[in-house]
Length: 319
Image (tube, rainbow, N blue to C red; front, side, top):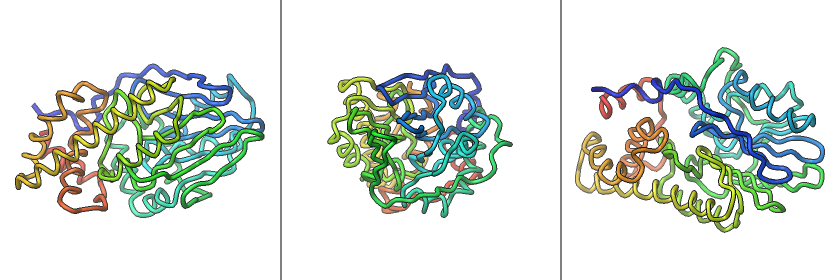
């Protein structure tokens, strides 16, 4: 029997948790749905990842207003994917002055933002509730190359591109005084890594760069907040295992001159036993196998996903 396309059958609401991690940092998580981060400084608030629509962002805003009435001054995009960024316009009414992104993220919005928006809206109907409130693509107003540092009053906030992985433009937000890291989708825990736009070979080294910061708490892109160094280490190791196992299977498939469908079956042999039960695995795996197969074959820059390509691939691999 064919599996329902992507997450179209995932219609059950998830339990949202708003967790205080330090004097200034909060995690907004929802049982494997995309996470957001919140930093409350002396004179304003920063959001890391916006939710998928302005309508859905209202819940996050309401939770922020339970702990502070300070203006939301900054929005940081951990990367370009629509489910992370299209809620940005909701924060302008709350005082947002800047939307911050890396150069790589900006370039991906230019290259494939429209295609990605159409693709993701079809994949995730529940996560795009109120999609009619989206005014269009989210464009950064401040683009940095490698790293910038802001101060929310006395609180130092570092925003950095430490390397590619989930995308070429991945951005982390780091509170060095409190050892709290917001990783975006560079780190996942108890959820599949979406690798459709990944730089798989580079991803492990980027995880090592995150580990070198020695974070004591970490908000991953999906999954629960990691609230002590042991949990952080597990999250980093889990993600590294996922992406290295995936790429190795892709390399074996290419070396064995398999077609993509055979590569999917081959990849399941190593991936299913370890990751088959985690959130969003069956949604991600066909996109992940496609990208691993491409990268192993020498296609270093990920091909653009369109709604049509999504459906054709899904029919071929999950039909």
